[in-house]
Image (cartoon, rainbow, N blue to C red; front, side, top):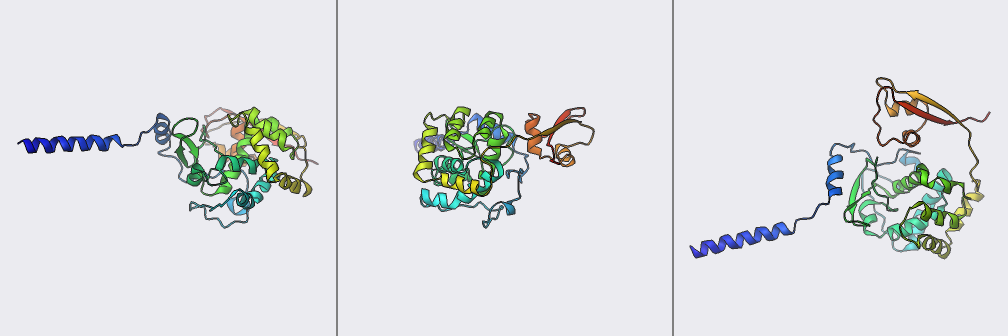
Length: 284
């Protein structure tokens, strides 16, 4: 009898011990996981801009999680400089800034978050992100970070992230090769909480001569200052059967741009809703 009671006590202690090792799930993790149970499994690849095959001359299989065995910072630069220059041509963000941010945020591609998610810029999920994600301890425990099938999607999403948010709008009035103003502007806009973030970016740019990549793009014909654009602005009243994608096709404007202009958190529409359309005026 005593032996039987002893066995029961030991078994109880083992169960309690096993339960103690159970991973703690934060409120944010529960909320994000629950909200995304029925999300689109193909989401997560930024839709603005060229298709994957048109992005960069790299062997890409988007159905596979690709990892680059980066040895050091110089190799990181050599691997991703062309991507950063492509983004500079497409969006006007200095390649030097993109590379310096990538080096700093990803630990030259060797950081734990980057290894898990191909997220080179520490971009968190935020409202409206419906792609792949993973949890990582940052400013708080178990924060939600975006996850990509390939690093190039991280570079593209970084460009979209900066160019589509109003708080970064002023940056695009700076000269495209003025990396110092961009570095201080990013801190001013709240990209990072580190007070020395601008100095760290500038130090990396000057140590590795990253601004040479900016000058190469400018010599290739990119204007150093963004030219003001003229737009036609009008509205579309939502009717039965309308979708944001359908409206975007009708007016030749991206879904992301429609969401940005109208401050939409989702693609859901209601009948009678007025959607603002802004299109660049064609030059005659």
